[in-house]
Image 1 (tube, helix red, strand yellow):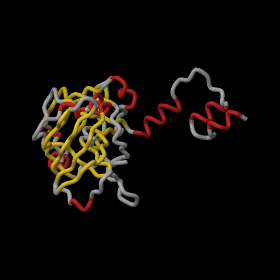
Image 2 (cartoon, rainbow, N blue to C red; image 1 turned 60 degrees about the horizontal axis):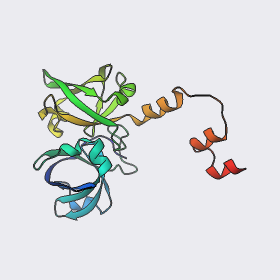
Image 3 (tube, rainbow, N blue to C red; image 1 turned 120 degrees about the vertical axis):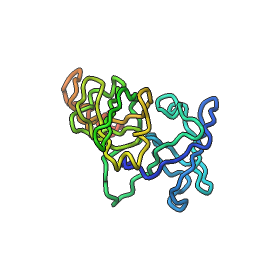
Image 4 (cartoon, one colour; image 1 turned 90 degrees about the vertical axis):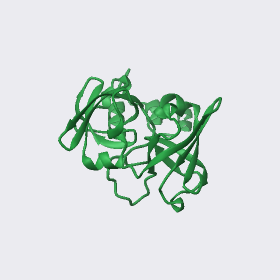
Length: 219
């Protein structure tokens, strides 16, 4: 679990594609003592597992599914990526709850300066549109942001000077593909209140939502 508050701008050293996966090496300024093998790290919002550590370098083996469904497939050597370590219990939640499970891709379609701020308009995959609500939260390339003026599958975000200084969002231009993760609370609300084929409460429904164990169906 993450918060969408970026801790470091990492530099891609290598991104080597294999038949069913990819090996990604990223240079980071975060202290080596803060990582262990097997730790989760959000890379541009995609949750990856550390498979190897060297001084200032993290190596990840990225699954075929992650390559297929995220913007990681567009990475090249020397690209800059957002890095965030997993949230620890007792830490302040400065952004919102982010799982690192990317829902789809967005594309920057407009970029406008507004005094000291910067407005980006992003077109999202259609499956994300139901979760785009005014003043709701969204993770854009792993950054926790507030949604302004959602219209259909498009929404606007405003980047304040601190966000511009701590992330790479202000350097990207229209056409850039970004990982998007909708607010997990919104996804659960949509799941439980969305249309169903029937509203009857039965054992299958209770098993589906964890109130009964599958073995209880045999009774």
